[in-house]
Structures are given as structure tokens and as C-alpha cells.
Length: 299
Image (cartoon, rainbow, N blue to C red; front, side, top):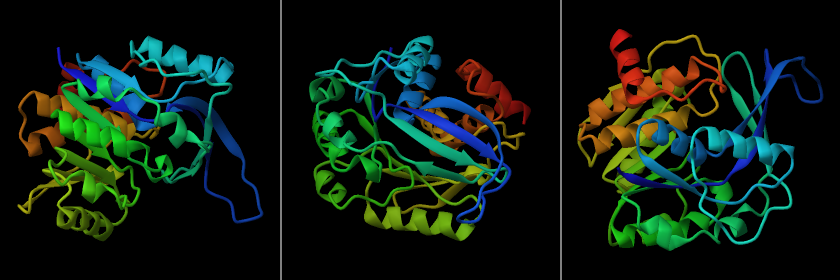
């Protein structure tokens, strides 16, 4: 069984669903709310467990408050083990997300001080995995740096998710000896030009063997080295939620690559997983490989 170490932060997410964002200094009716978890790493770990891999989450601890208990219960239901870390958390960090009918999302991040917590993860456990997935968001500061250094030095496949953040200024120096297998980020689904510009910039930076840019309903594009661009559309679905779609994509991509899939095939499977996830609610069971493959074939 393949072992995958997933490095990320862990927090509760409260999502507010509205018809449209209001003007500044005005209000809007909240149609419904729900709670989930973040960042991408915990969800990637859950999907990978459903896909048959031994995924472990490496990140900060949550508190024993209501939010922390809910986050822990969800991870337990996915059978995701959380690597032990030093100390305990007095409270669970909470992010607030607002989503409108057009699929736009605005984040209010409650992650102050998170980099210090993440600097305490056990690098030995991470480096011993077969695959290492690293969330490399701007809000995490330099915390991913030591994880990437340890993983690239040890030799496992490394998957880096920028999550739409700028490329950190330290990343180039980390990859002098060996590059990650994949660098993934996201772009505006309504702008083909933005997607291609992002792909070109990451390719020119020579950051990874394979560069991927996801673009929501528009699907995803990738390029290996300086070769041709591969573009795969998302499977059209009635969108019921979007939180976690990128994580579903990442986990399915890792699974497909581990099975020997070529980039186009892996991208198609990952896009199908993201669309399938968006077509259901957070409370549904995470899909396995057969369900994702059947969904892709029927679309």
C-alpha cells in the first residue's frame, strides 16, 4: 500500500451561501450555511484513503471545542490519521468563506500564527513516505520550506499545491538539487488568458516536471517540461458545493499517477473527481476509484 504524507494546516470552515456579493457597506441575505474543514491537505488525505492509499495528515492540532471535535470526527469518519504534534491547541482556528451563485468565493482567514505551529511537524515521518503532498499557500509563510527540503532530499515524489498563491521567493533555491514531480495551482475559470499566462509563468520558472493549472468549470491544463499543452474540460454538473474541489482533483491526480497514467489520462481522471465532488454535499461519502471512473465514462 502506498504511503502518502499530506502537509497542510487544519481548521474549521464556516461557509455562507448568498445570491450575490453586496456592495461595500451594505448587506445581503444568507440563504444557508454549512461547516467543513480546511486546508486542502486534510481533504486530499481523505480522498486518498478512499482511493486505497495509506495517507497521513501532518499539520497543526485542533482544540477540544465544538469546531475541533467536528473536524476530528470528520477526519475519523474518513479514517485519516493525524500525525501527533507537540503540545495542544487551546482553540480551533476558523475560516469563514462566502460563496455566491456564480461560484465566486471570498475567504476570511483565521490562521494567524499558523506557520509557527506547522514548523513543529516531524520531518522524518514525512520524508519516509512514498509520496509527499505539500500545501504551499502564501498564508503559511516559510513553513512549507523545511518540509520540501526534507522531502526532496529523501527522494519521494513531491506534489506542491500553490493554491493560487504567488510562487514563494524561496522555492527556486529549494529545488536546485531535485524538482517536485508536480506543481499545481488554480486560475480564474472565466479567463482562458489568465489560465494560460499562469501556466506559462510556472513553466518558465522550471519548478517541476509537470505543471498543472486548474480553472474550475473550465477544467485544467498541464504541461510537461516545455512541451505541448494538454487541456481537459471539467465534467458539467449541477454544482452543489465547491469547497474541496481542488483537493479532490489533487488526490485523484496522485492516485492516477501512482497507477502509471500518462498526464492526459491522469488529468481527465482528476477533473472527473473534482466535478463529482462538486455535484454532491460535504456529508456524502468520499468516492472510490471505480465510482470516479464510472462517472467519467458516463459523462
